[in-house]
Length: 94
Image 1 (cartoon, rainbow, N blue to C red):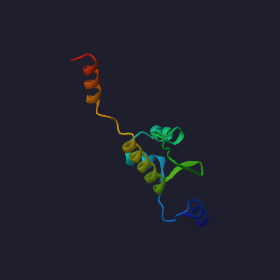
Image 2: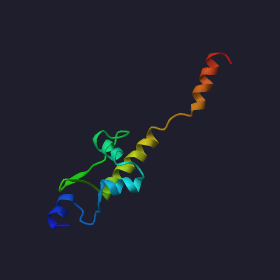
Image 3: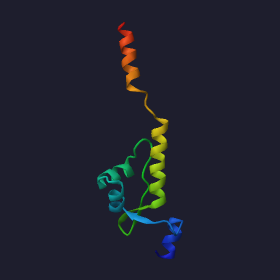
Image 4: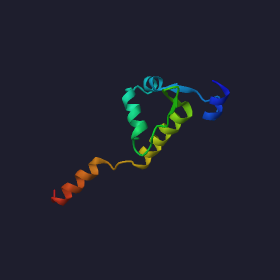
């Protein structure tokens, strides 16, 4: 990696991944990655770099995105669906 590019992306030891590599690693379609990049999911967006006309993802950016997804999933934990059923049954007097 050229020194100027290393300075641009910050940590020179941070691995650059192509979108295809990320898709294979996460076992998702590449269009899913583009959707995560453009629209996000659960309040988190995948940060990417455009280098020489190619979308790239720093390993640290990918890790930060996955961490944000996991933290968001924990904070948005859904109530047990059985609770809703019990409330409805109680409402009907059953």
